[in-house]
Image 1 (cartoon, rainbow, N blue to C red):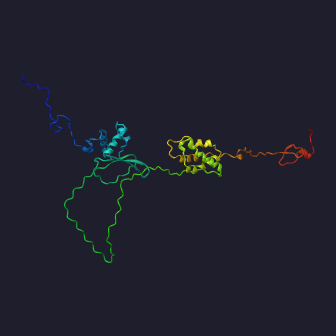
Image 2: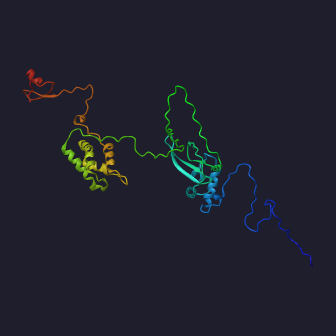
Image 3: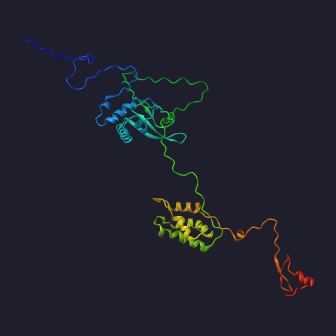
Length: 338
């Protein structure tokens, strides 16, 4: 009964770990990579302020080749996280220096986002020119370079003796060497997006005749717009500039209520430039002139001859003739009894 019965074999050390396994925690099984691997520093893998999503996103970006697209939509389509979480993780990487994004205008006028990934923020990087991307967002990895070795003891430099002057050579004035122009910046220059319009505004319509009464009515109409809409409060200079256009409306027999309705309907919110809006509406909504009285007459049919009526000089009877005079009965002396 003194023989001990063993039901389970003792735990043996793991052959992969090369020694005795730890009593708790993680045990690493390390296999050396020979292809398709990325070197990540512990300063990123063990970062204390970055979130786990930001650390994983930084590792994924550093594993991508140059020119790969890393936009928020591309990453959201690749991973199950939402666009909001991926955008927050990218902002964390920008705040800690692992990522830098900037808006750049290309030679053809398009604006793209340039993304630069740093695997070791704060390290010195070589001043190399980054090629311009052709489309979309691009990522460029800038690896750090090792600092140059400390210089050792060197002998004092010996200034070389100047060469003997050539015969019959003009004397050379020794002075300070001309300054070399600074090297151009290899990085692209960020340009603001164009906001000003290129096409000039259309000119205001001008009246055909100077009518002081219409000019006073147009000026009063523009000054009275602020009572209808407080946003259309104009200065005296704006009223003086816009008055000829309103005079053209009144000259074409447009009713003042029609002019007010055309200038005050469907105003944008907020209205930043009321004078520019009124100038555009006065020019673009100008009604055509009404047709004249000669245009209202019905056109005559081609080939139809109408002989007018004339009154006889003797009997006052009506007859058709091209010229006034006597009727046929008075000319022949024959009259029928009434």
